[in-house]
Length: 282
Image (cartoon, rainbow, N blue to C red; front, top):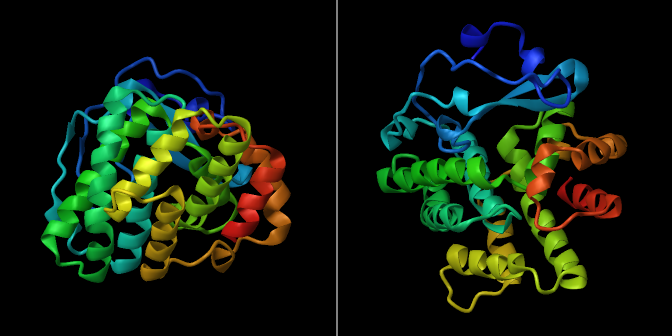
């Protein structure tokens, strides 16, 4: 993008930069993912760490989308187990959050549903046996579909937190998503039942539970239990293990509340909600 437009990354970065619009098409590139996580090969943004601002922020434009995306599951066979877990939980989150987003639409719904099915079929298996080509294919598709879904429906509070946490502590992005996912789902569901019981997001959370567990009568609580069990099986550490401290809480919550991803969350969460989520995720 910089080769096509000139300038410095801070000219274009959101929040911490000048947020300048990208006006010229990026120099064409071919995106070849070797992990199954972000779906960056089909998204219009690049996430950069800004250590001096203690934040990760995006620069984005449709003019940045790669000219070609080559997604070959065989290229992920050598991905180490911890990275498989971290990236895979990011991919799962990036299917779930667009599915319940306030900006969800029929196209992203189809992408997210398929991605959740692939996560259910492949995530645990890919971690248990990295040479399992079928499981790797499921996760490559989950990542790809999640990237397309989020690009058109936004994300939610998990990613609102994760970008902030990654700028403050040395927490891999997928680890942050894993730690936050169940607490955010529970906080959203609690707030929706209390303040917006007619929200379609509640039915979406129930459908997510059915897709992940494979049980046609699964409840939202069953879905949360599946997520928590998966995180245990994949041996993903909590946020505190990666250096996030209790004294970071006020800074994290203040920045997360302003994050772009929060715009897609199915309900506006209070500062008390955000503090409770962070405390549980630690």
